[in-house]
Image (cartoon, rainbow, N blue to C red; front, top):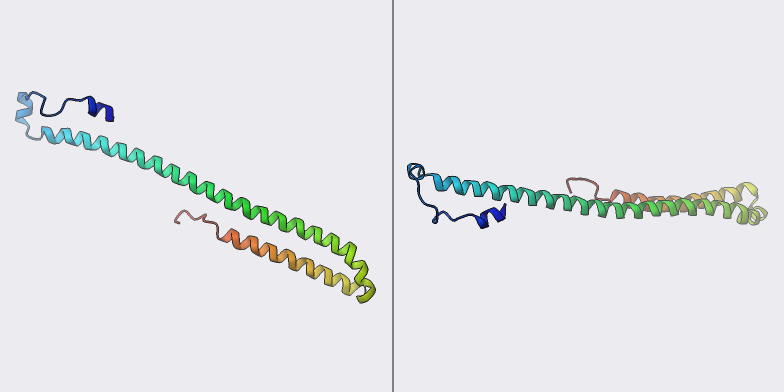
Length: 135
């Protein structure tokens, strides 16, 4: 559309016809056409900019979401590994000193505490994600 304006003849170079002299708003019509062309071009540029904005916003959100999911996965793996290691290793040792019931309770409580701390970190980061379209 810009090329059409460059190749078009200027208003001063056009010869006046009887129709043009009868209508004093002929120049206003031509400028209106150019204004509409500019408006369409601006709307197209705005649409392209909006698409790029949302594409970038989605990319940022995906990166942050991946980090949260990675922390969640690590918390789950560490929680399970901790349960197995504590139950099999330390339970045998503590059962001699505290008895089997107290040793099991202590190990279970500490394992759950570690898992809860990691889950709270993941939940706090998940709440900070900019997922609202109004932001």
